[in-house]
Image (cartoon, rainbow, N blue to C red):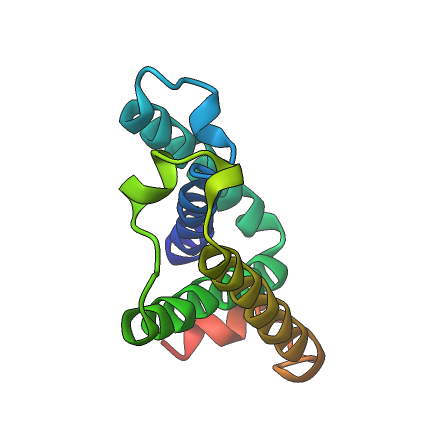
Length: 137
Protein backbone atom coordinates (compact mmCIF):
# COMPACT_ATOMS: atom_id res chain seq x y z
CA UNK A 1 0.00 0.00 0.00
CA UNK A 2 2.98 2.30 0.49
CA UNK A 3 3.86 1.99 -3.19
CA UNK A 4 0.30 2.86 -4.16
CA UNK A 5 0.47 5.96 -1.96
CA UNK A 6 3.75 7.07 -3.55
CA UNK A 7 2.36 6.55 -7.04
CA UNK A 8 -0.53 8.86 -6.20
CA UNK A 9 1.83 11.31 -4.53
CA UNK A 10 3.98 11.38 -7.65
CA UNK A 11 0.89 12.29 -9.66
CA UNK A 12 0.24 15.17 -7.27
CA UNK A 13 3.84 16.37 -7.60
CA UNK A 14 3.66 16.20 -11.41
CA UNK A 15 0.34 18.01 -11.38
CA UNK A 16 1.80 20.81 -9.25
CA UNK A 17 4.77 21.09 -11.61
CA UNK A 18 2.38 21.23 -14.57
CA UNK A 19 0.07 23.83 -13.00
CA UNK A 20 2.80 26.00 -11.49
CA UNK A 21 3.80 27.84 -14.68
CA UNK A 22 0.18 28.24 -15.68
CA UNK A 23 -1.43 29.49 -12.46
CA UNK A 24 0.14 28.40 -9.17
CA UNK A 25 3.14 30.74 -9.42
CA UNK A 26 0.71 33.67 -9.13
CA UNK A 27 -0.20 32.72 -5.54
CA UNK A 28 3.19 33.66 -4.05
CA UNK A 29 5.18 35.40 -6.79
CA UNK A 30 7.91 36.73 -4.49
CA UNK A 31 9.04 33.17 -3.57
CA UNK A 32 8.35 30.99 -6.62
CA UNK A 33 10.55 28.03 -5.62
CA UNK A 34 9.15 27.77 -2.08
CA UNK A 35 5.65 28.17 -3.52
CA UNK A 36 6.27 25.27 -5.92
CA UNK A 37 7.60 23.02 -3.13
CA UNK A 38 4.60 23.79 -0.94
CA UNK A 39 2.16 22.92 -3.74
CA UNK A 40 4.11 19.78 -4.59
CA UNK A 41 3.77 18.66 -0.97
CA UNK A 42 0.09 19.57 -0.74
CA UNK A 43 -0.88 17.93 -4.04
CA UNK A 44 1.36 14.94 -3.31
CA UNK A 45 -0.28 14.31 0.05
CA UNK A 46 -3.81 14.82 -1.28
CA UNK A 47 -3.39 12.57 -4.31
CA UNK A 48 -1.46 9.98 -2.32
CA UNK A 49 -4.38 9.65 0.10
CA UNK A 50 -6.98 9.71 -2.67
CA UNK A 51 -5.09 6.94 -4.48
CA UNK A 52 -5.46 4.69 -1.46
CA UNK A 53 -9.24 4.97 -1.90
CA UNK A 54 -9.50 5.11 -5.70
CA UNK A 55 -6.55 2.91 -6.56
CA UNK A 56 -7.33 1.84 -10.12
CA UNK A 57 -8.57 5.23 -11.27
CA UNK A 58 -5.63 7.20 -9.93
CA UNK A 59 -3.08 4.63 -11.06
CA UNK A 60 -4.42 4.90 -14.60
CA UNK A 61 -4.38 8.70 -14.49
CA UNK A 62 -0.89 8.79 -13.00
CA UNK A 63 0.67 6.47 -15.55
CA UNK A 64 -1.11 8.22 -18.43
CA UNK A 65 -0.04 11.66 -17.16
CA UNK A 66 3.60 10.71 -16.64
CA UNK A 67 3.77 8.70 -19.86
CA UNK A 68 2.29 11.49 -21.95
CA UNK A 69 4.72 13.97 -20.41
CA UNK A 70 7.70 11.76 -21.25
CA UNK A 71 6.48 11.33 -24.84
CA UNK A 72 6.03 15.08 -25.32
CA UNK A 73 9.35 15.81 -23.59
CA UNK A 74 11.10 13.38 -25.94
CA UNK A 75 9.46 14.93 -28.99
CA UNK A 76 10.41 18.37 -27.70
CA UNK A 77 14.03 17.28 -27.35
CA UNK A 78 14.17 16.37 -31.02
CA UNK A 79 11.84 18.99 -32.49
CA UNK A 80 13.10 21.88 -30.36
CA UNK A 81 11.39 24.88 -28.75
CA UNK A 82 10.30 22.86 -25.71
CA UNK A 83 10.06 25.42 -22.90
CA UNK A 84 12.24 25.24 -19.83
CA UNK A 85 10.86 25.98 -16.39
CA UNK A 86 12.57 29.38 -16.32
CA UNK A 87 11.17 30.36 -19.70
CA UNK A 88 7.63 29.50 -18.67
CA UNK A 89 7.70 31.26 -15.30
CA UNK A 90 9.43 34.40 -16.60
CA UNK A 91 6.92 35.08 -19.37
CA UNK A 92 3.32 36.13 -19.32
CA UNK A 93 0.92 33.43 -20.43
CA UNK A 94 -0.16 35.76 -23.25
CA UNK A 95 3.40 35.77 -24.63
CA UNK A 96 3.82 32.01 -24.96
CA UNK A 97 4.87 30.98 -28.48
CA UNK A 98 2.48 28.78 -30.42
CA UNK A 99 4.89 25.84 -30.11
CA UNK A 100 4.43 25.79 -26.34
CA UNK A 101 0.67 25.62 -26.76
CA UNK A 102 1.14 22.80 -29.26
CA UNK A 103 3.20 20.86 -26.70
CA UNK A 104 0.52 21.40 -24.04
CA UNK A 105 -2.22 20.33 -26.47
CA UNK A 106 -0.22 17.26 -27.46
CA UNK A 107 0.33 16.38 -23.83
CA UNK A 108 -3.39 16.67 -23.11
CA UNK A 109 -4.31 14.65 -26.20
CA UNK A 110 -1.88 11.80 -25.43
CA UNK A 111 -3.00 11.86 -21.78
CA UNK A 112 -6.65 11.49 -22.80
CA UNK A 113 -5.95 8.72 -25.31
CA UNK A 114 -3.77 6.83 -22.81
CA UNK A 115 -6.36 7.21 -20.05
CA UNK A 116 -9.24 6.10 -22.24
CA UNK A 117 -7.32 3.07 -23.49
CA UNK A 118 -6.46 1.99 -19.96
CA UNK A 119 -10.00 2.54 -18.64
CA UNK A 120 -11.63 0.69 -21.53
CA UNK A 121 -9.17 -2.09 -22.34
CA UNK A 122 -6.56 -2.63 -19.64
CA UNK A 123 -7.52 -5.02 -16.80
CA UNK A 124 -11.12 -3.92 -17.07
CA UNK A 125 -12.58 -6.76 -15.01
CA UNK A 126 -9.85 -7.13 -12.38
CA UNK A 127 -10.06 -5.86 -8.85
CA UNK A 128 -6.51 -4.88 -7.96
CA UNK A 129 -7.35 -4.34 -4.31
CA UNK A 130 -7.88 -8.03 -3.58
CA UNK A 131 -5.29 -9.61 -1.33
CA UNK A 132 -4.50 -12.45 -3.74
CA UNK A 133 -2.83 -10.04 -6.14
CA UNK A 134 -0.38 -8.96 -3.46
CA UNK A 135 0.38 -12.49 -2.25
CA UNK A 136 2.12 -13.36 -5.53
CA UNK A 137 4.87 -10.85 -4.78
